[in-house]
Amino acid sequence: MKLGSTLLAVAALLLTGTLASAGTTDQAGTTGASADLSFLTSAQISPGCPASELPAFDPAPAPKTFPCGTCSQSICAGKALGTVCGGSGGRIYKCQAVYGTLCSQESAWECLCWSGPLP
Image (cartoon, rainbow, N blue to C red; front, top):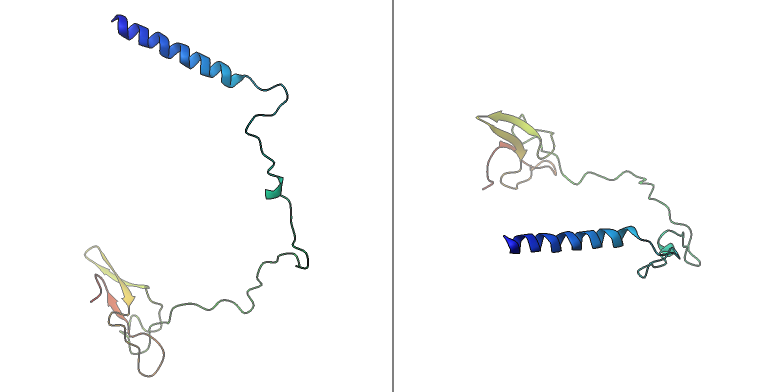
């Protein structure tokens, strides 16, 4: 019991000391760990370079996926890969290029309404 009381008293003194030192500030307003970080916020332009501009996106970016072709299942024809095409028994079915083949008439995927791992 005496050891527990002693440890509690020591912990209270340490906590009081750290709180007291945290409340004091340096009279000059600086700390030992200060640094000049103005370079992070100042607008710096390299000599001979125009100010930076955001891209205009002209023309607009093209989609990165081919749509499902006309040779796909009827529910997926013309839709993008990953489009939800059905659901049953708690599973969600999506238009997927299951076998990775393209329709012979066009550059579009042969899609099936699929759920589960791909073969």
